[in-house]
Amino acid sequence: SKPTPNHFIRSIAKNDLANGKHDYIYTRFPPEPNGYLHLGHAKSICLNFGLAEDLGGKCNLRFDDTNPEKESMEFVESIRDTVQWLGFEWDQLCFASDYYERLYQFALELVDKGLAYVDELTPDEMREYRGTLTEPGKNSPHRDRPADENRALFERMRAGEFNEGDYTLRAKIDMSSPNMVMRDPILYRVRYAHHYRAGDAWCIYPMYDFTHCISDALEGITHSLCTLEFQDNRELYDWILANITLEENLIGERGKLMPKQIEFGRSNLEYTLASKRKLIQLVTEGHVNGWDDPRLTTLVGLRRRGYTPQSIRDFCAEIGVTKKDATIEMTVLENAIRHDLEATAKRVFGVLNPLKLIITNYPEGQSETFTVKNHPKDDSMGTREIPFGREIYIDQDDFMLDPPSKFFRLGPGREVRLRYGYAVTCNEVITDDDGNVIELHCTYDPLTAKGQTPDGRKIKGIIHWVSAAHAVDAEVRVYDRLFKEPNPGAADDFVALLNPDSLHVYPDAKLEPSIKDADPETRFQFERVGYFCFDALDHTADKVIMNRTVSLRDTWAK
Ligand code: ATP
Ligand code: MG
Ligand code: MG
Image 1 (cartoon, protein in one colour):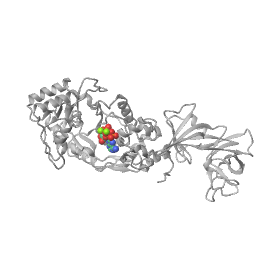
Image 2: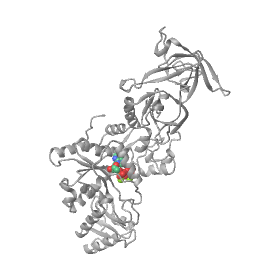
Image 3: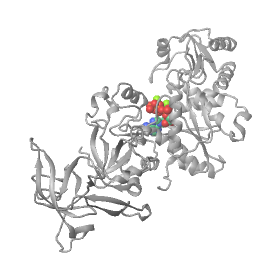
């Protein structure tokens, strides 16, 4: 694990502690439960929870659930699991929907103070009245409605006396503000929709801008971190908090000061989508097999693919936190998991594309075992026994009928070393009627056991293998990038940019028997091949199904 990276928000928070502005740091991660979390959210999780952890503060997990149509408990549960899986603990588990009554009371306070009014402009009229960046807006004809009338109308909105769209509650700020967000933003709208937590208790729902700042203040959040697109909303955030009266008992001793919003840049990974709306489309249209498809950069997908929490935290530390949106190359993510698995994965032999190799001078019925290390550099990971016999499988890629001189693996008449075992020479190639190589007949040199070559001859190639009599059959799934283009999110039709070869299944893979006894969470390096894990969904004791997490090296051709 790497040292905590410094960044501008950490500097601000440390300063606030050093100069006594705050006695503690309190942050929150505020997802909307309208989809599964993706890698972009991991950045926000690591930032919010990481900052609190680092500076001895606390962080809440808050569901920002004010859009009844799109939210569900399924998403809440997955988000909760994912934050825990990443290794973070929240202080309070909060829901904006728990604040509906308080939010309503704060809205009434603004109404009574003449700082909010009930409007009846249609959406089109409202757009027209709003003006543009270069033209000031116009006041709504209903803007100067007396406070008591506004209160009565707002209460009737809440009581369900109006249709959707007939009335809204708007803040009364400044229709000619250069900041468009400040031109009398909507605070509440009428919605007859069932809410997954609040049920049918409400038919008016608060807008994000009204909800977020008050939720932060109620929870005593000190630093409210959000992405850059909310920069203009900061003025409204401060305006709302400046104009409501927070009860001391709601915020306790923490709430001496109002929270401060600080924006940071989004990070988007090349060749992936990071928008819940677009991810939903991939899932519902069946372009991928669910939210946890290992080709997706949802966090459940990455988890199923074999990414470790540590690798994702390291990735987030690596990309850092800045004031600019950033596009991150895929290799940054892949190197994070390679780095972790290189140190922690158990080494085994796995042959994805098997080719039978018969050692004609090895006695029939005989076998032996080699004791080998589970990790070349970490003796604490122990050793295992690899059985060896007369018939083995090698990978088809390790044999060529007519190899070029630089090919140091097996070919007719050539000699190669079986890793940890003997040297074998290929004497005969058996082909089927179509000329496909189906079997190799070789002889071994008994004097070359365990890497020895008593006569000192050079054997350049070393290949992996699995004993045919002991092999475990497996289906191995190898994934490639889901999209052919680096920025699919920018295209109108991102579905057209899907990589048709993003999944390659090896149905007849042969694995060494030690994987049978492994814990299902174990991560493996198939030597010379890549990093693999059991598929959490489809793998069973009877049918071994594994996913390739990542190749050993970056081999993707641009
Ligand atoms: P989406 O567009 O996928 O729905 P969102 O921002 O609307 O994303 P939220 O559930 O509101 O999703 O996100 C929770 C937090 O995660 C927010 O503070 C948001 O700013 C942050 N976040 C989302 N995507 C990214 C990203 N790509 N990079 C950094 N932070 C992100
Ligand atoms: Mg959002
Ligand atoms: Mg969104």
